[in-house]
Length: 343
Image (cartoon, rainbow, N blue to C red; front, side, top):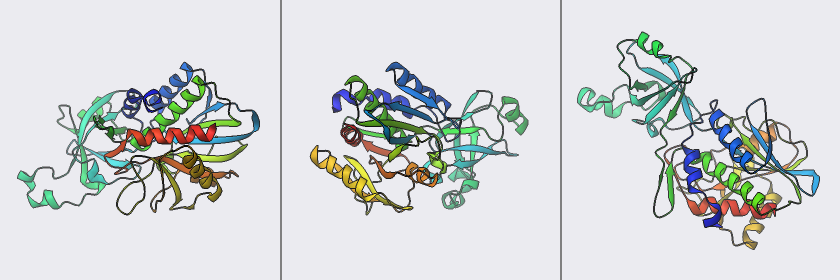
């Protein structure tokens, strides 16, 4: 399965499509094109989410899997007197994880400008210890535009304005040992996994027992991703996001991670047992874990009022919301769990 159903080209393409929350149209169009190519039915919500459906033998019950297509990013908050740009964060991340990073400014008329995110004291030769000990808060960062700028009016003349979206260079790398290093593996790794699962089901003419829905949400990073557009007959809702390997955690970069509890409370005990049993019966590598600073699309769905069992699974993503890393095997094991669950 690893050789036949993991598409490294696809995940590289997905990772390099800018899609900060609120700016996900290009990513949505990519998914639409992929689904059109294999004749999968889908519909688009007013909010910009996509719901794909594979009809099962029993159409009265649905199982819904959700993966979010939006990522972290930034937005221009001010054009400064020094002809640089202040930003506000989209999503939550440590600011020094993007310090010195290349970026693109996306204007509302479709133009793109390159720049770099720097601190307000970027040179040790100029600012000495002040540069070293500057507090790494958002207000102490600014975008330096890679254009010849003499005054703030020059910026407006380019078409750049407050509210423009900023996407950071993903710096995607795939190593010979099978590691993928990139920004936004959360949640592009799971988006890729879901697309591979859909392709597998279609190519192998699998008819599920129940209706299977795949919801690609687009506001997860700001807390209301899967808060709408969920089929009413959904009995089980599984967020396909990420696990968090790290200090004092049980998660792994080499298997599928199954969350038992996050900052919102425990996930459904019986559904988790079902997922674990499938892993055990099919030799799927897995890890159970608890995440103290985590929320998922499953939480958004529950708060919207759905009456369903709920779970959270995904590949293990090291250094989440930073410069992230996973191993190809973790994505493959996630795919195996989803496919065997559906079958």
